[in-house]
View (tube, rainbow, N blue to C red):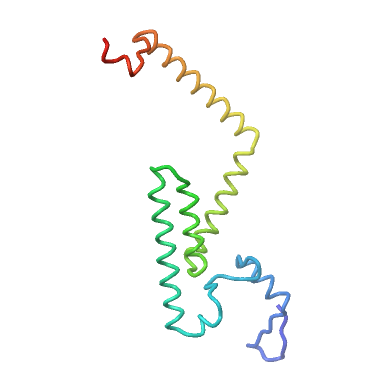
Length: 154
């Protein structure tokens, strides 16, 4: 850090060092953590709180829709992360959760691309497939194949 004066308690940070510190703190694209609301909204407390409530309600609706889509057809996890991204425009905790999630997904993708892990996964999948085919074959050999529309005729 550069000291800009001779006084012992005063420290002046050069602009390039401030940018380095912002990047070290995890700021992306020149923006740090915090609200991404327009300045005229942030300038008025009541309007900013209303904005945050609106963002929270919209994000909650999207996350709830994603949770409903988990057992039902639809891209449940994608919608849940979309709701988290909506929350992250306004809330620091959501920004931190998204950063942690992105880091973990990147780490998992790197591990999945490891040739040793891929080889192990292919072997396990092949063994599982052989077991399922063998069990299916034993079932068909023992009980035969009865079509659903022929069940009442027996």
